[in-house]
Length: 449
Image (tube, rainbow, N blue to C red):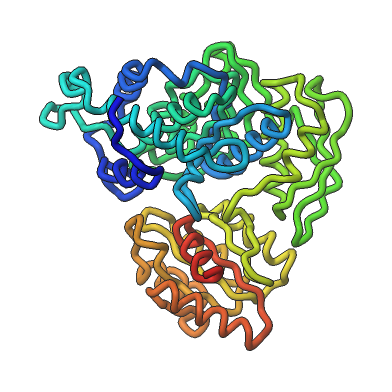
């Protein structure tokens, strides 16, 4: 095997040259058969160990992280795959509650590059960019294979895997998991997944496997009908949140969320008193989905491991306090933004300061309607440079709702954050930074540097 890389940074730098949808680049087609061919060349490392597969429009990262945390607390060697990252790109490919060793990243990277340089790959029309449907391997295809190889080289014995986008044609959908989890469905990535809830739900439902259970978050009727049809066709047991689980005794504080989780069926016999160090009702619901998934896939896992895993969960940019009265949250859809704002106002009161930026493909008008009345001052800025954005257009959407006096456009993110902090200090007001994971990553760097 070739020795190409000296560090994980070298591997990720090499990967960055490939087509990346997160940067707005588009391959000629989405094809799962490209990923199936890549994994065959690699000896199918994704089949070495069992997995849990998570899709959805919002909350899938939290469910993935929580599932991995409980499995880690139970003594498993867990490989965790999530996106995007907030602080360090290695967050996407983790071992237990931290990173893999540099030795694992290097070994997996070297094997990955060897695979991309094999004659069999070059000879396959799927990877010939001059062919009608051909395309070089994409960033996410290779990143996903890199994750599988890290899990192999790291001697892991279970994987918690979040989809990148959609489900049916997502690179992660080569998995044959113990079960699938699908969180709440919203209109998102409509250019790729379809322009209706039903179409998007059908794409997400593509991760459900024959005879394998589906743990499903509460859905609107349109989406629920799609999932009910899918599990019937696949002969897959359905664990539907409103029918199988009940949350009570919810107590939300700046330190986190206490709640009691009951199973309405035989999933676990006694109610579980749980705590997660992340505030918000939605995070309690995410935790409930994760508990249902882990206890279904691994019934032997103890209640102590469930509690310990959730107690120690660390997921950056999910209602994370980065300074006194300064919260960041990666909410980037109207529904997730509404939930983040509701939790923020419940804990810190109305009339705070909002620092907001979103990608060009997001529904800024809908998010402006949700946010404008809840804050005394709103700073619109650039959500990083990773994805295409249009801050002036976002500003117009917010100014149309809340007025130009309340709303400011400061394209430079550092300057926007500094002015928000200065404004908040004068009135002793709390700050919420949200709208994009890429924005909150920048805010985090600015505030904590």
